[in-house]
Length: 215
Image (cartoon, rainbow, N blue to C red; front, side, top):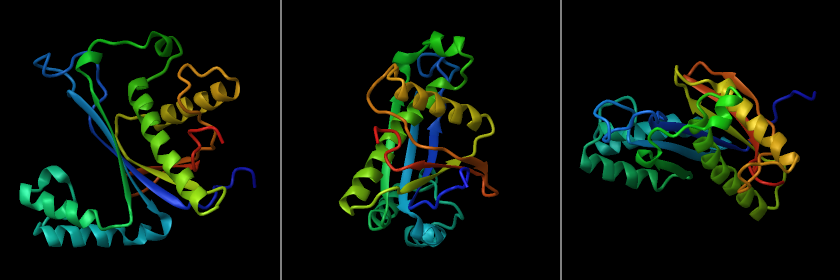
C-alpha cells in the first residue's frame, strides 16, 4: 500500500529546552522569552527501544536518585557526572542545536508571515537538527552497505506546538528542493513523513535516512 508506514531501523527522541519567542528576549528584556532555544536528539537503533526504560532506571539508580524521570536539571552536580558516565556507555548518539537568541531579538521572517507560516523559527532550528541526525544515519547505513533505512522520530509533545505546521514546512522544503528553489541550499529534504499521536505524550514521524539531504 502506498500509505503504509515502513519499518524503521533507527529511532530519534526529540526534546527542547527554552522557547522560540523572539519579540522580547531575556536578559535584554526583564520579561520575555528565554535567551536560549536548545533542541536535542538522542538516536538509537529500534532494536534497543524496549530497553530505554531500563536504561533510565539503571542511570537513576547509579546516580542515587529516587526520581521516576531522568531530567538533567533535577540532578545534583555529582549525580550529573555519574549519569553522563552511564549514558556514555550506551549504544546511542546525541545531537544538539543551541541557538542564543539575543541577536535575534525582534527579528521577523516576513516571507514566512506572508505565507501564513507559524512557529517558523522553531521549525527552521528543527530542520538543522534533523539534517545532522539523518546525515549520520545515512553515513552509518552506508558503512554497512544498507539501503532504505528509515528513522522514526518521536517528539516530546508540547501543547502550544503545531505538528501539522512542522510537517507542512518539511513538505514545502521537499517541493523547493525538487524545483531547485531552496532559499538556503545547505541540505535538501527529500523523504516521506508520517505523523500521528502516541499515548506516551510523544508525536511520531518517520523519514528516510538522510532524507534532509540529496538522496
